[in-house]
Amino acid sequence: MEKTLFEISKMDCPSEENLIRMKLDGISSIANLDFDIPNRKLTVFHNGEMDKIEKSVIELNLGGKKISTEQTNQTEFEENKNQKKLLWSVLVINFAFFIIEMTTGIISKSMGLVADSLDMLADSFVYGISLFAVGGTLIKKKRIAKLAGYFQITLAIIGFVEVLRRFFGDEKLPNFSTMIIVSIFALIANGICLYILQKSKSKEEAHMKASMIFTSNDVIINLGVIIAGILVNWLSSNKPDLIIGTIVFILVIQGAFRILKLSK
Image (cartoon, rainbow, N blue to C red; front, top):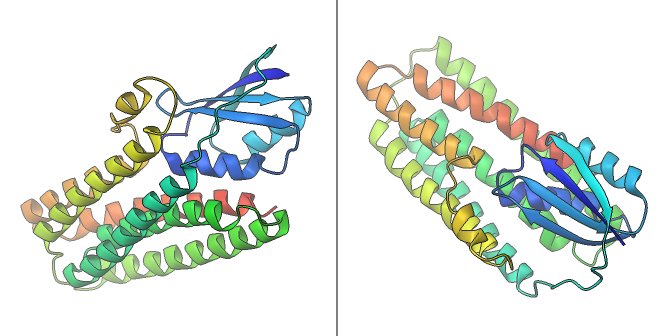
């Protein structure tokens, strides 16, 4: 048995962990994957096929880099029997906030909230693929990933078109208070999701360390929408909202391409 350590520089939330799990799912030589999200590290226990494992990690464009490979005597690993239940919990939370943010974004005329709702939907796709593809064939998993990726890209493009329309048109200002309040609740929801998943880890205090989530992309987006709401009110302009919306739509498309990587 060999133990290979990877640094994954862009792995800052559980949805990236699930993307990596799905990508490596078809490699039979892998015995166990040990994720350390706070330190952005992945330890792979395997028998051979190192080149294939390394190539799969790099293909996801999450900043994966092999640090070391060494022999190990460890052959038994603790299985997380509650993983399916945990995935259902975070899937429900993310999908619920997709609906909440999409609805309030449309009502308040905030593209920042609409874009953030798609980011929540993107995470829902990742958790959903993990759940519904369990026990299924590799072809089934790839088909689901392809549909999810293209659907996500389509929604993001529609969002871009709406941003351009509002940028050059004469639109009413978004409701800044709705932007701020809903984003604060979304921030809390992201924290709960990360806490729920990290709580299942066997490492002592790993979930407490992971609860310091202010390096997470999701949290940065939430904070960005809050700041945009403040600037909308201060500047009496919808431009801050359109700017944060554009940034998030770009991140959503990048996430969609990562999902599409699973279908190859």
